[in-house]
Length: 393
Length: 229
Image 1 (cartoon, rainbow over the protein chains, first blue to last red):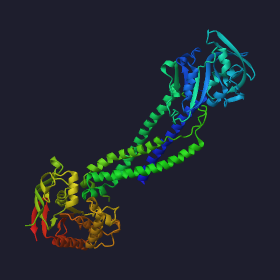
Image 2 (tube, rainbow over the protein chains, first blue to last red; image 1 turned 180 degrees about the vertical axis):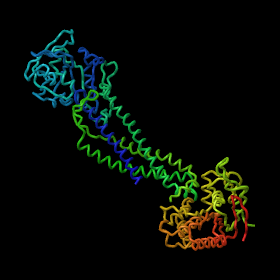
Image 3 (cartoon, chains in turn yellow, green; image 1 turned 90 degrees about the vertical axis):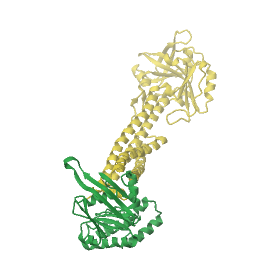
Image 4 (cartoon, rainbow over the protein chains, first blue to last red; image 1 turned 120 degrees about the horizontal axis):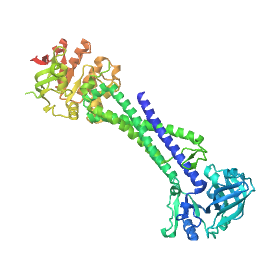
């Protein structure tokens, strides 16, 4: 009975670790997916220095050449060219500072999810024209309704003069990301280029790749622009280092939690084994007195422990599959909660990392064997004459 | 001249220290020859069990020398002692000391397993000794399913099956009724005579003493007489 309980404790520990791990992996995958699907993409190209202050003059150098170079990447699936500038949005109801994004809707709808986030009106339908879509919080603050006329004011890229363009509100989006909903407007790229006197130049190319690792890293490395090109190509891990750090810390925190949990379990197993030895002290005394060597006696406990470990792992893996299958159906609902600048927009579902699923059973077995070391030593040094005196009455 | 199997010189064993020191054995000098069937007798507390435990290396001496089959037990490590007991000494305990979770067959073949005796030979030897101790057909019984006398026969078979140089038996009949005890000693005596096996056993049962070829009397840890009959 005691052995079964020990096996169950180890099995539950294994289930807990595998379940937590799959949920953490699921959470990370969810966060990375939310971050890369919403606006950022998997990677972005900018002119060097653009990211610091969004200086309108800092456009991508040698655009045609850069685009050709990027398109050479065999895993590139989507590419969106953007113009970005800080601007003032004015309506009859007042003004509001915004980040304006000039896009080609035919490219952008494949990369970000603004088209799916439209709650009123419609998405942009042309790379030129006077349509504008914006976040619902901006709309609320300026008391806007569809069809309202809006003026966007920003500094142009040629002589730093104030430039203006008139737009008409065609849609309102709600992404779930407070910052985007409160400060972002999307307009046709060519219209914004014209207003900012960019003459076809752009500030940002956002990219999506296929064949990513489970952590969202492209399997084939990105083709980096030459240092002399004046451009930089950054993966989301560099664009959002806090998110990347969170995913990395998850691995570390899982490792720490795993060690603590398995240590506690190992102490329980040690206790069980010691009780088992004490209960069978007389039998061990008999076998030692008739010729079993200390190593052979200690080995018996190690064999017992390995069997216990195997049994626990089998039970644990079966239970883990059951628990994970259960949560794979329901998921855990964290939608709307923000973590590290990313808002969860979907339920979190458990997600496997096979290499980790293999590590935990080994870790479980390792700690179980570790738990047997002290009892094995105790048996090794146990004198048969003393053990024989422990005969059960 | 008969070969010496056990030789002790000035054997002393004491427990505790200072005022609480108890001398269990004092200056014990003993030689056991091959083919002996010796009884160590004496009242309770005279040191019989302590002497037997020391002779098989289960207990240590405070001073003195002890050699079994020409080898000094004091110089052996715990592992060497275990292997020496396995190969040279058969033990029979007062309370049988069979392993309760093993069957009769498994109990008897256990030592041979440690000696890496091939399976077929093990089975053959177990069958032979089960016949010798009149327990044919009981090889798959567990100790709890046997009477005290039967359990002690299994213990004797276990002690003999590996062909040790000597069998040490600590009050082997103490837990048995006198008829069963006498039968058991007769059986041991038969093995002694037919197979020239050396037996040393402790007892304080006068009926058993009668069947011994040699009687070593211990009192207060000292040998006060050593008689051949």
